[in-house]
Amino acid sequence: MDLAKVTSRGQITIPIEIRKHLGIKDGDKVLFTFVGNNVVMTNASVEALHEAQNAFAGEAERLGLKSEDDVVDLVKQARAERSSDYQCV
Image 1 (tube, rainbow, N blue to C red):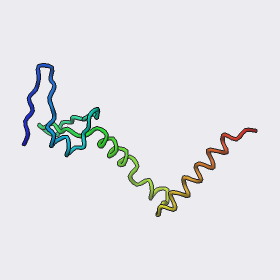
Image 2: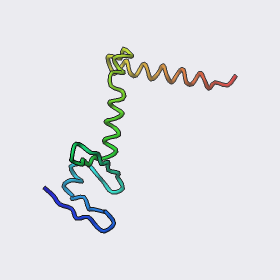
Image 3: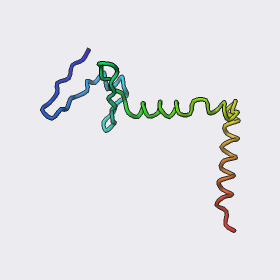
Image 4: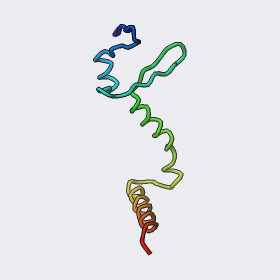
């Protein structure tokens, strides 16, 4: 367990072990959320990645993608469609 002192400006120094555990580096943002009567601090970048993963959950199955080759083919198809939209006439 680590303690941090709150300054008169409401600032704290996050203990090194906590920063290492959360992968927080200089300039990173942290996210504070309430969980019951507790506050949980997380690395904001990691949380954003988890939200994106959750948003895309099930999309591969919905699109019928079963392998990495299927994904590569879908990307090639999208690129071909996009490049044909920008061809000069």
